[in-house]
Length: 150
Image 1 (cartoon, rainbow, N blue to C red):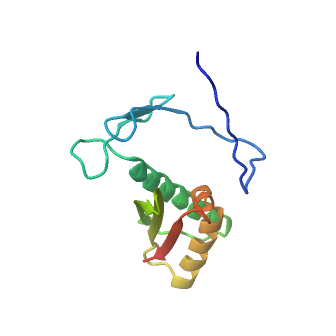
Image 2: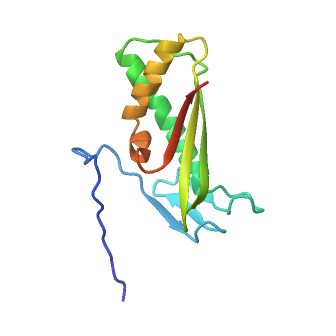
């Protein structure tokens, strides 16, 4: 007999309208597991960080998603303010997996490169993007985060 357990956690930000729902099926966990989205666009194998294999890990996927989302937030804000972003804008994301007491925990850094931009304008955009990016909002108060304008 299959038992379905539903849990709904309260969050600070409640969605007024769902714009998109990502769906993925995962099996096997970190060591030799896999995950595939319902549309087939993502189909990945997993390996524990530092072990042999060609698989990725959840921290790499989080780093890629967060940095890409943050670029989108920068583009959105800059567009509204009619500020041109450099074509070679880039973010190097780092997500740490470590111990937080007896449990595992995460920490993250975004190293943002906005070459050729006025430093004050760039810093203001980065700060506003950090307030609006859904990944940044999800991490706020939950993990140690450092945002660097390099």
